[in-house]
View 1 (cartoon, rainbow, N blue to C red):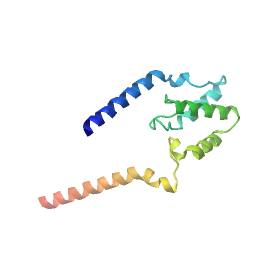
View 2 (view 1 turned 90 degrees about the vertical axis):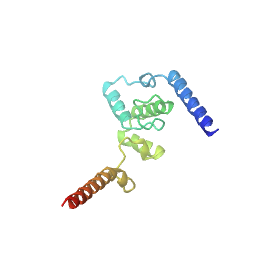
View 3 (view 1 turned 30 degrees about the vertical axis):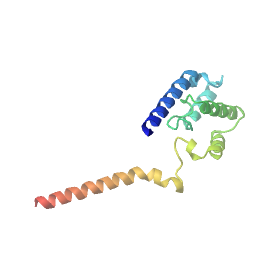
View 4 (view 1 turned 60 degrees about the vertical axis):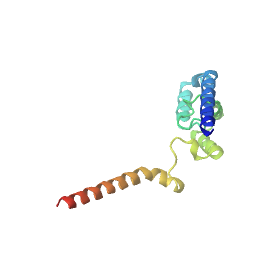
Length: 140
């Protein structure tokens, strides 16, 4: 019974994704573009620094989700209103949290995130060193 329910949910999720992929316009077609190339470049750079909260692995610049389209529109509206990149970023972080940033800030609550790769590498090196030492002690 559990297996059939799981299979049903997987099929429904796949059908939903395929339907939404067909009905969602491409990212470049959503939202306005600036006629000024400098502003357009600035907007695209800013959009690449913000994470899509639906897709989570894509920036809002490359995502096709409706939320990403709304966020692109919001970024462009604020740029047109004369706000700086840091003001726009602060507004979005206040609204959605640090998760919206593609590069999380180095703060006390993100130290583990930044240090984890080094800790794992160090632990792996320690295990390898201990293993080699034990193997050489058995041979001798």
